[in-house]
Amino acid sequence: MLRKRKCRYCGKWFRPLHRLKNRQIACFNPVCQAIHKKTLDKKEKAKGLRRLNSKDWQKEHKVWISEYNKIYYSKRRKEILARKKEWYRRNVQE
Image 1 (tube, rainbow, N blue to C red):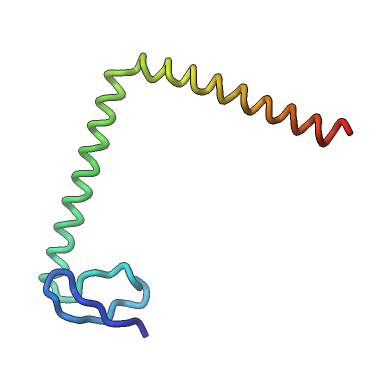
Image 2: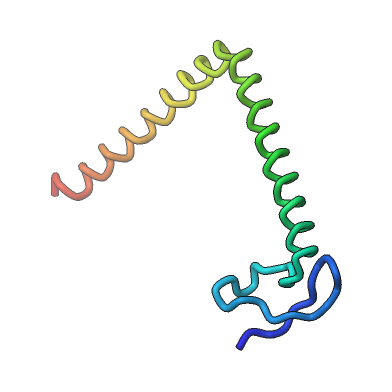
């Protein structure tokens, strides 16, 4: 059996469902469940707003992003090729 936990909203002790284990923070009281659902909705809405803001920024800075990607991935590609050559030299050409 799982240990009892204290409800974050009403402060009463409850046993969480075995499927949720340590993730359940609200008891089975409908009022606590409703409050918890509202807080989750607020978090999701804020997350969506952050995503929208980043999409706007990406639209405004397309040139910067493409230049950055060219530089970064060209360096990265060179590093990967160098590693492959080194591996090939060590393992295959012996």
